[in-house]
Image (cartoon, rainbow, N blue to C red):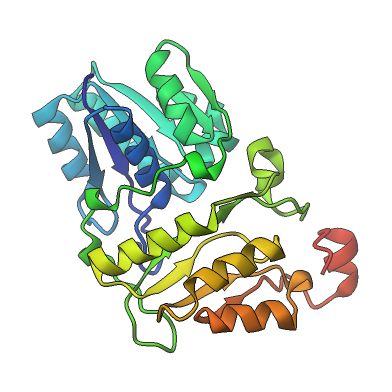
Length: 295
């Protein structure tokens, strides 16, 4: 198979876009590797002259296929990257993936992409490579036990720096589950069918990945990037029982109205040091009636 180049664009709008590596595109990279597709990744996070780097690589390598991940705030930067890379390598096939591609695929095509992968990128990338003439590809949501771990070896993990609050420990991001069944009116995820259903990873797979991160990168602290880690209480209890007494420390996001003392106690015993939740409003009417947050 011909090699594929993946591009992680910069996020200059953040205080620091070198806090966490982009797990989505790294998971797609891992799926490509698992399928036997040679893959390289151009990580432009934190790169000041990102257009020059992108243009230079396109001119020197003339890649056959380039996949660029994009969320909505990144779109202006991605459009620039696409323009300079296509100028240097007109024959390259460019495809877009990521949150903005799933929510606004026609916008990505209008910006100049040849193909857009929507929804689940792990299944979608394989379909895209089989059907390069199809402008829109919709990935089928796969159970998370079929997802590979992110190919973190494709980025310089040492260049990412995040310290878990209150611990002094260097941490990295991990996903334990994906999706949210709630219906908050401000959330664009409501528009994505594949995001409406909660999918969770097997607890043993989570425990094994944390052990891998500890042994290979010396990381004992983690930001769990699930939308709400406590939606499925019995599953979270099992995860916590497997990682308790390992010495890990972590923080996560929770759904406030599902959080209780039993859950908090189990999480704390497993190393959780901080939980975060969206406040949105101090008005019960707005929370319950207007934005449908149900808290």
